[in-house]
Amino acid sequence: MLELVVLDVNETLSDLEPLRACFTDVGAPAHLLDTWFAGTLRDGFALAAGGASRPFSDVGAAVLTGLLRHVDGLTVPVDEAVGGVLDGIKALDVHADVPDGLRAFSDAGVRVVTLTNGSLAQSEQLLERAGVADLVERRLSVDDAGRWKPHPDAYRYASEQCSVPLERCAMVAVHPWDLHGAAGVGMTTGWIDRRGTPWPAIFEQPSVTGPTLADVAHALIRSSSAIGGHG
Image 1 (tube, rainbow, N blue to C red):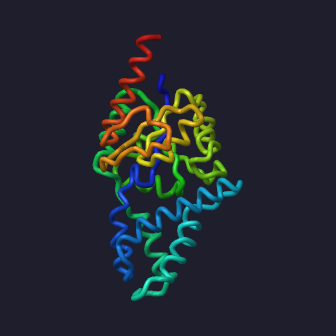
Image 2: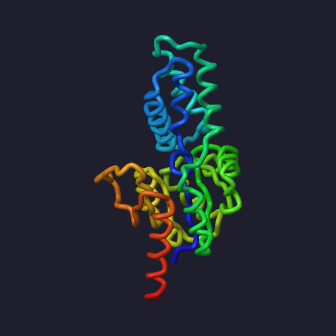
Image 3: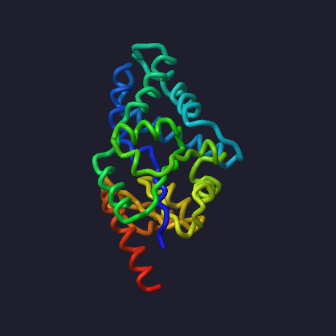
């Protein structure tokens, strides 16, 4: 039975698209957002694989500094450009489907927490701006787990903090790598596929899939009810 839903934050709840303007405002191409975010995840994963961890802001700043030094026509110093992008993260809003998804879990009596590779403060501010902070029981960060997701320790940390066995937890995210990591420790998984992207065949298939958080929420709730009904 499903007792706890653990939500990823970056891209899953937050809409990163406005960050493209932070790049173009300093003379960098908008598509550099994708390269930067992927590079930040890569280096965070590498630290976790090597038994270490650094805050998202530190990793993101290091990656972005390297990228921007190769941009011709930058209109401000590199350090200022890096600060502008990182500040932009603090002003992001949730995707339009997030409030309905959170309410679906709340109406079903399912506990909800967030687990981010980013900072607790940014998770809190994001939810408060959207007016849904009261629908999320706790905000958790891998900074306290000591390893970035998808390292197993990150998911175990969330389970332990909430006193819910992993097999009664579900991880919900837009990132296949995140769900693959969660499945590896026994969690149910829900994939939000907002863009109609094929699932990478190299990863463990998600338990449920939907185009919005609300769709995934209803699918997880139905699945849990069906299991409970047969129990």
